[in-house]
Length: 215
Image 1 (tube, rainbow, N blue to C red):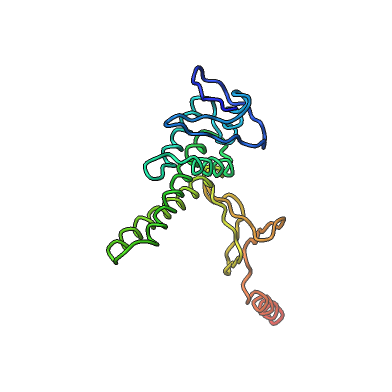
Image 2: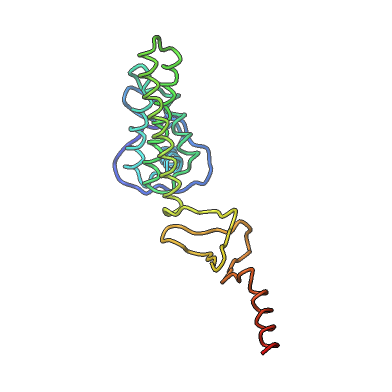
C-alpha cells in the first residue's frame, strides 16, 4: 500500500529507534512514502532524516528529490540512496539535518563529476571538470569538519605526545584556551612539573659547604 504525503498540520515526529525506513515512490513531482500506515511511515521517515515535524520532513524530502535528478528527472533509487546516507549520519537536530542533506547532495554531485572526468576528452575539458571535482571534494571535507565541530560544541582536542620542559620552566595541563583542552598522552596521569632545578645546583651546594669549612 502506498500512502501519499499530506500537509495538513505540523505534527512532531515521534522517535522510533532503529526500525527500517520505508521506501519512497516518485510520481511526477509527488513523493509517496510506502508504508501500510501513513502516520507510522511519516514517523519512520522523520526519524531517518532527523526532521522535527511534518513541515521539516516534507521540505527536506523535496530538496533531496531535486538533488537526486538524473537526466533532468528525479531518480527514485538515487533518492533512496541519499535518504539512507542521511540516516547513517544520524542527524540529531535541525542544523545537522540541513548539513547532512547538503553533504549527501555534494557527494552525489562529486561522483557525477568523477564520472564526467572519466569520459572527458581533451586537456581543456579534463581540467575544467577536475577543478569542479576538486572544489566539491573540498566542500565535502569542510562540511564534515563543520559537523564534527558542531557535535563537539566547537572544541578541538589537542593531544600532547611529547612534553619538554626547559630549565626554570613549568608545565601546565588543563584548560589553556577558551575552546581548547590539553589532553595528556597517557590518560590518568597529571603533570605538574614546577620549577626545574639547574644541573649545577649540587656543585654550588658543595662549594658553599667548602667555603664555610675554611672560614
